[in-house]
Length: 472
Ligand code: NAD
Image (cartoon, rainbow, N blue to C red):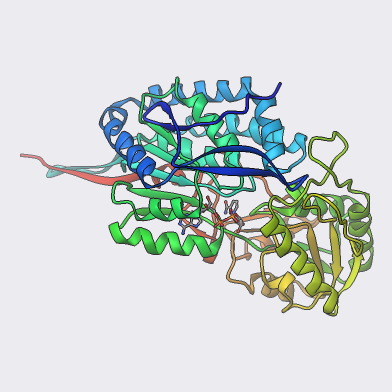
């Protein structure tokens, strides 16, 4: 069953219309399939005022009571997995199976974070003094999300902020506003009015949020370039920021792997959601002893992956989410054609309706080529050869990105010691793209600032307050 086709903003616990409208395109067809309201400055001011008004009561609610609200939200999402997943596939493009997984994880992640306790810490307790460290909510947190995983990337920052006693104003990408607006509707009966406000809107609304004096923190997920703008604009009122930005994850494949098995896993981690994942594998470094065999196996995976509308059961790769990104990915492919690399799969690209890109594997495109240096955010996989591990590590770390990376090898101790030298927020061994509610996730270098999930992510929504008592 699908939802009905009307959408509204959520402000102060109620439906609100916008001052403008967004047309939402289904990337499998390239045509508009829905419209929704868009907020401007007036709706933002109303949402911030509602959030500020709700804050004094919400901050006083116990962690347990806040966790209970979040559990009810998780139940509401669970009851709506199918319509949310279908809507997600229509607005985002990903195959239905991946959409169901994203919706399902929203519940697990949010509940997972509410299992974490935040207690005052006693720092000093001696004859003279008793000093405690308390953590208190910041106030109003703005959550700004991108279009590649709109539900997943809203749920983490949103539930972290709410569980720790903050009120929120949530803004999805203008390319994928619909699921987020629906989740806002589901939250109206669960949270006190004003605690949760959801506004769809364009990039200019995001800019207004980062500059708004009534907002205390920005939890931003998106590109490095926009993250820098958010940080600059947040500095006006010294807002706190958590920035979850782009990546250019390397996978280092050692000579002792089972080639067929690891090629399959690397292919999946590079092309899930058509490569539009911050922590997708974006560069593959393979030991020279297995290089040719690995390239052949990866190319075979690429040739057998079925491309199509995400609503079709057999689809493995859906379309690129929007025309701008489609043109960008096609630009990478044009550059690859002009460069020294050998295209092993994906030389033929589809034409016709929808933003489809067939998975492309390119061998040795050149270490300074755009496909190696930049974040492609599409199903285009560059595969480079290495002889010694120090060289592979140097090349993997030779980037301003630092989100995550992985090392693949049968000798787990050796692979682990290599992985620990990756300059990233998360280094995986024999896996990629695995996150948990209790484990911090975020970027080193220009891939971000701060962490989501875990006690570190929760404390990112709080101020540390020292309470120091002189004993008589
Ligand atoms: P984007 O930066 O263009 O947009 C992200 C959000 O920011 C959107 O809601 C947009 O409307 C808003 N925005 C745009 N300009 C703004 C401004 N000046 N001030 C405030 N907000 C503004 O990113 P995108 O193209 O939607 O997403 C793709 C990028 O996101 C990729 O680089 C990807 O790697 C990254 N990403 C990172 C993570 C992570 O956890 N590290 C997760 C997913 C995606």
